[in-house]
Length: 73
Image 1: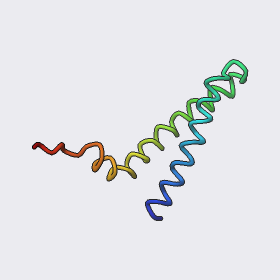
Image 2 (image 1 turned 60 degrees about the horizontal axis):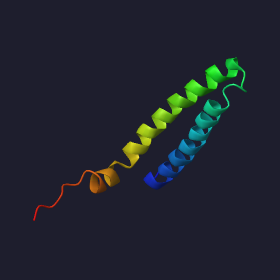
Image 3 (image 1 turned 60 degrees about the vertical axis):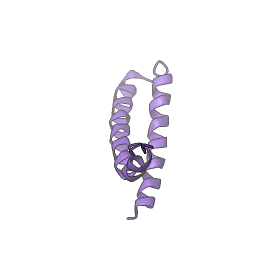
């Protein structure tokens, strides 16, 4: 699988998981606790894993743009 295709999948999954996290956090009083206590933590774990994968896949860009050394004149 190409890096671009992997990033598209990871970014889409990140968006969906983030939306689920936000919605379960905002509407936690409207959701039965038995459902909330399963969905919210597991989507949090998935979000953390996807963020780590996102950083790994984008590390070249991060290194070139964020971690680059400043030129001294």
